Structure formats: structure tokens, C-alpha cells
Amino acid sequence: QVQLVESGGGLAHTGGSLRLSCVASGLSFSDDDMGWFRQPPGKEREFVARITWAERTYYADSVKGRFTISRDNAKNSTYLQMNSLEPEDTAVYYCAVQPRYTSLFVYWGQGTQVTVSS
Image (cartoon, rainbow, N blue to C red):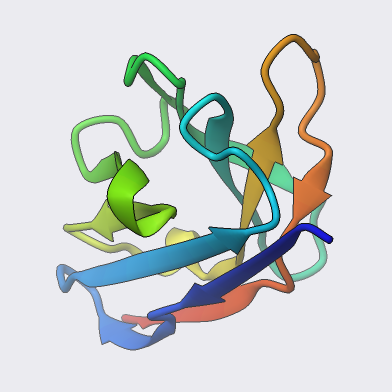
């Protein structure tokens, strides 16, 4: 049974930082791509960042240069370091897994709330 548990969300001021963590269990992890997505209030869920099994990284234009995705395979964990936060970053953040040899993010965490005040 695959389980993803996010943590690290909370309240930050504009210009502040938060670090999200996601611990995975029940999967190979080191063979899989990991991603972070977010759903702002009243909007659709959107892509934030991705790190492949080979540790290549990809970012949405809106967070490029401010957010950094990383992974620690020994801890079955992925992280999202968020700097220079803006009120527009307010959302529920989800981590997700795209198993190797698939084309979809199949497994999702329950989400963690990030609120940025101006």
C-alpha cells in the first residue's frame, strides 16, 4: 500500500520561506519520479516542480528561481524549499509519485496548507 505524507506547511509572510517534506512508503521510490503540485483557493490543481529518478528537475515558470525540489532516496523523501514566498503561492500543496515506466502521477498525498500573508 503506497502512502505519501506531507508536512511543513503553515503560515509565512511575503518574502519568507517554508520547506515542505514528503515521506513515501510502499513503493520503490528511487526508481520513481516525484512531483509537487498545488491547488490555490477556488482554482484548479497545478504543477509546481518535478524531480526524476535521475534527479533532473523541472519547475513551473511561476516558481522558477524561488523554489527548489530535492530528494533523499535513503529516507524515501522529497522536499520543496520555498523562498521569496508571495501571496499567490497560497495553496494546498500535494506531493505525488509517477512510477517509472508510466506517464502519470498515480499516487498522491493528502496535502498540506501553505498560506502567505501580505
